Each structure stands twice: as C-alpha cells, then as structure tokens.
Amino acid sequence: MARLGLLIEANRCIGCDVCVNACKDEYEGNDYPPYSVAQPDTQYGYAPSFYPEPASKLTAWVKRGHYWMKTENMVLGKFPHLSSTYIPMPCMHCDNAPCQKAASGGAVFTRADGIVIVDPVKSSGQSQLVASCPYGAIYWNDDKGIPQKCTLCAHLVDQGRAPKCVDACPVKAIAFGDLDDPSSEISTKIKALNAEPLHPEFGTKPKVYYAGLPKPFLSGKVVDGRTGEYLKDATVVLRAGDGRSWTTTSDEFADFEFKNLKVGQMYSLEVTKAGMRPKKVMVYLDQAKDIGKMQLFPEGA
Image (cartoon, rainbow, N blue to C red; front, top):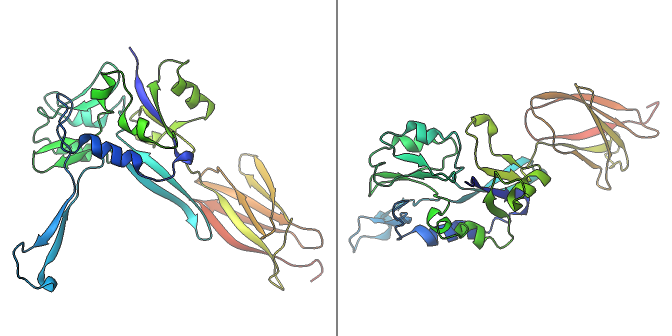
C-alpha cells in the first residue's frame, strides 16, 4: 500500500495563497463524510447589531475561520540583510501523530495510505486535540464542537485525484505521491533536492517534506575604518570549530554573506585586503545574523 505525502518546494512558493483559497473553496460549506464536515468561514460584524447607533459606538468583531492550508512568511536576519521565504503549511500527517495519541475512542486514525483523519463524529468535544499538534494545524469548530484539520483531500484521493492544493498551485511548488516508492516522482525529488521535514526535532515523523527552507546566514560589510569607503574584493574567511572553512569576497557594495550555516556554534571570521591590516572576530551564531561593518585600517596606520 502506498504511503502518501507531500513535497513542498518553499523556494518556489511566491506567497500567492492560491493553495489557501483552493482549500477554502473545497471545504467551506461542503461535507465529505466520513472524513470531514464543512469548514467554517471567517465571520465578522458589529455590536450592537441594531441601528441607528452612531458608528463611533459600534464595536467590530471577527470570528476567524480555519486555515487547513496556510502560508507563513519566514524572515531571517534584519534589514538590509535578510531573507524572506513563504512556507505553505498543511497538516503534516505524521507517522507518529501526537493528535492520535491525545484522542480517545478512535477519534483520530491513520488510513492504510498514511493519511491521518480526525473523525468528525467520534471527535466531538475533544478540544484537547487542538493543543496536541505542535504545528498548530488543528482548529476548533465552535458551532459544531469538533476539532478539524486538513484531510489531504482524502475524498479526492479515493477518486484517484491529487489534493486540491497540489492542482491549484500555479508554480507547481507542491508535489503529491507515494513516499515508499523510490521510483515515484515525489521520492525522486525528495532525494535530489535533499528535502527534509519541518521541525524534525518534534519527533512526529511528518509525511510532508520541504525543499529550499531558509537556513541561517552570516553577513556583513567591509569598510575603510578611516574614510568609511566601501572596500570591494576583500577576502573573507569563515571557520567553524570542527575545522570546516568557507571563503568569499566582498562585492561592489562591500557586502559578504555565508549561507546555510548551523546555529549554536562559534565561528571565526577573518577579513583581509592588500594594503590593509587584517581583522579577526569571533561570532556566536544563535540565529541569522548581520554583524554590520567590519572596519579595516591601512597597514602602518
């Protein structure tokens, strides 16, 4: 039996939210027994609801709907040195699903193809499922008193079709298929792109993989300490405690950057340029970081 999952290429996502809207279009107002009942829409209004009250005395209220597929904008660093990546986030359909452990009476079950389903009948009143998900992918339906989440469009999968978000994505950033078939398109892409699950430290064994996730970086600018002039083509060497090293040069704007680094490590950063005294600093990388200006001074100055 296939073990179905998704591959999301975050570096291709343009943040258009077409996948989000396609999901809402499929589920708002539509029941798909036995997998799901209609997803609630966002509601809003004003209180008190009668007129003629002056507008200044009316209080707006919003009751947010569900986002079984959502996009989050992950920003690393700070202006002007930062990276911004949109990350589509459905339910991860975990092999070691915390929601299934938190449920009672078989309210959460895993199908033979790996899709994790919250039973819309058996889950009645089980609000603890919302807090059980470390990815925040389970929502509470106040009107029906049940938890709800992405079903990976199980009703479409049963018809031999792909989930709605996969078909809707205009840049084909989401792939769907059998994770256990090494020759499947999704398995081939996961291997080629070195894809990984989101937050593997959670230990949930997700069946949603990501390629192109933003990684921590270290950046800075090389300038003349006396004049403030930007220094192009300075050699910048970054060394890790395990002996690894990386070398780059400052560009025409005097900027340099090292990508795909590991946090929680101490690095040695050395900047050299002909006619200037070298400068070396130690940097502890706890997150993406821009260290600002590295000032070099002429030899003998």
